[in-house]
Image: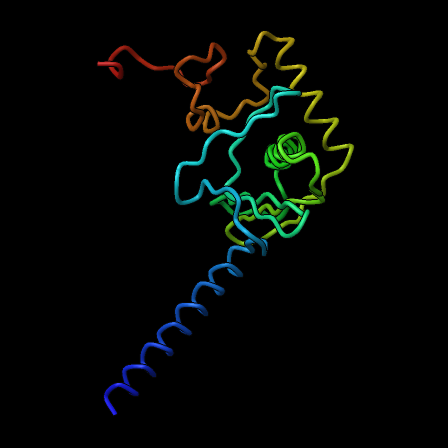
Amino acid sequence: MEAILLLIFVVVLILVLILAASGKRKSFSVPRGKKIYGDMLTKGKVLKSERYLITGKPDLITRKGKLIVPYEYKSGNASEPRTGHLLQMGAYFIILGDMYPNSIIKYGILKYGNSTFRVENTHGLRNRVLAIADEIRANSGIPSRNHDNRGRCFRCPYKDVCSQNLIHYRASEDA
């Protein structure tokens, strides 16, 4: 009798864990398929297109048959995808196209805290990413600041070396 109760308990526990895992997948809109890369829980390697010299680190990549789907999670909220995030997804499409030439990369998933967007892999997006990459290279890797928002500079990882930084430090702050 105890063995049967223990078996029932184990089966119920397994079902609860499966349901919890599938609920987590749905809450983040993670695409179905085999996970072939992940940067959300572990430090994934930087992926690179050798042909276009573009790099990136998607949060997750899944594969189902020949279909590959990049997934990017953003912690903030948005009512529509932000331009920089669309370009980021476009870079992933280019990189994955080079890495997996026999695969199909139709779209990616861009997830914000309150919304999820399917980003289509279009020629227009690809051309935009490649044009911006060319522009950055033409400026010797130093893009021109395209905003007047001090908050964006404050959060920028390059603020300490950027000559266009809008944050002005006083000598007393450095001490």
